[in-house]
Image (cartoon, rainbow, N blue to C red; front, side):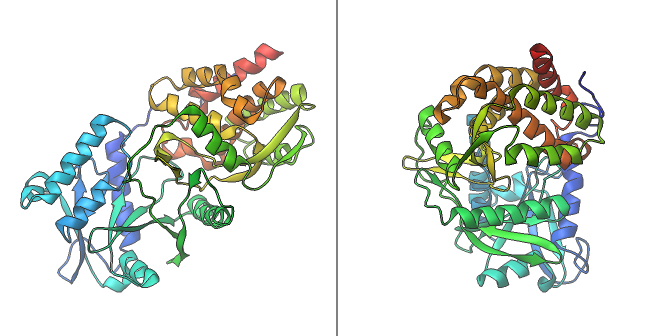
Length: 410
């Protein structure tokens, strides 16, 4: 068995070009005809392109300096000191009279009837005046419009997500369900957003969720505190126990693998999964919930709680500890260009990662390998490679590690 590579590892178009293309798609979606960027009809709204038109990452409303500064200050969590400095510099420019006009000169203006736009829909749905900023994310199969809703005084009212295709509509519905379910659990160590509105606009699934207070003073993120929060989520909907081979989890994963079996990567992945179950089917595992994408960029640490967002992958009935393995792998991938080495490193520390979940002995390696199969199955089902995602081609990083591990066991 050998890993396969069915798409080029590097994209033919750079990230900047893909963002420009996506910007045009988002504008047509949020401001459909008869709205236009060229015309003389009433102006619906105007945006600044940050940092510029060649590398758009954020659309910032020009309605007022206060709103524009809030749009940048709270649109994302910088993952480095340099990124924070850049953000703060843009915020300072937006607050300074005249500076934004000089430093942020690239604009896009929308003309047309206000009632036909996403702005009009959200104002009516929430019953209040608001302005929008729009995040232009990197290429991914699950990329969707994410809007920050800002009040005239600069306060963030919430964040809206739009599911615009089969995959993203399903994910937005899933996140709505997850947030509603978690609102009744009474989590102590973790704070999640509240659902402010859920509905449909022009065939698109809409979720508006409350903002989390990321502006509050931060606290240290000790490993035991992170593990405790993940354990709380894991047990939030109850836990169960069974052998892997007879578990509902394996039955569900097998169905997902069958759905991607016609893909070259799917065949290799399915063979690896069957080998795992042949060797560890009689291992007793505990199952619970996981966030599904718990990563440094989807959380913030406060003194009294962990703020965690992006719950669209929340799932119940998975082996305990999946969140811990995922977090470690994503953290490593973020800091290196060698994703394959990151996978190996995460597998190497799996015993320590899983110990807080009382996963020991043969269950450790089994849980870690099942996580890799689960993640790879998600990538194939979502068609991340076709969407141009950086890690979408599994044969360049995840599959080689999985294959080597299985061959070592044979």
